[in-house]
Image (cartoon, rainbow, N blue to C red):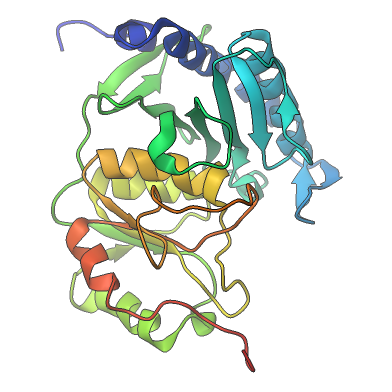
Length: 307
């Protein structure tokens, strides 16, 4: 490109209120990253799911909620770290669902983690087809931000010191037609035998290389760039999957499908999945279209003994 295009410039073609909200989210990066070295080891308790919450998890959640509320643009906030959704301003245009720090178990090992957000106009629960925008930040060796507001999937990189200046890295991203990598979460011995065979074929038939980092944002970013397959499937321990539909699966499904990929819940596209429980978990499968078509013929739902 002849010159750098900043995130703020790129979002100007969007509805002004949505653009302002997205820019505010991007601008949070510097203060969030500054906290990383100071909160590596602390634990603040458990969340509503009984999972251990790191000190950094809790701090990031609180910080993002305060910043979103200060915009005056957010009506309600749903978060994995909030026991109840936070009602902010009844006449504001947007509802936000988020995983404030996805992959937080990677904090102590200095592996990738990030933030996932879905921005809706209607209150939850609604299908992913109602998303006004989705985005994720990936805190790796560099910080990247990918967003999708209905006009393509675009990736930005934060660089230079000081302010959170994001510059365009890839515009209108498309997943490569031939996949390159795959990642699978969970315990293989708890999958259905049919899905385990399917997983082996990813190597033997499709010649994909195994890449798994233990953070959804990191594994997702790999298949967005390289094509392939990622799943956290149904298992005996977690027959309904591990990741959450509204906080993680739906926002990322919008990005992935708009970039030319396909998603699957075990019965339908993750963007079409309906549920009245905003905390519901779902099996999730992301991949190149031909791989997902093959998956649809595979028995993926695992059951505990006696069920």
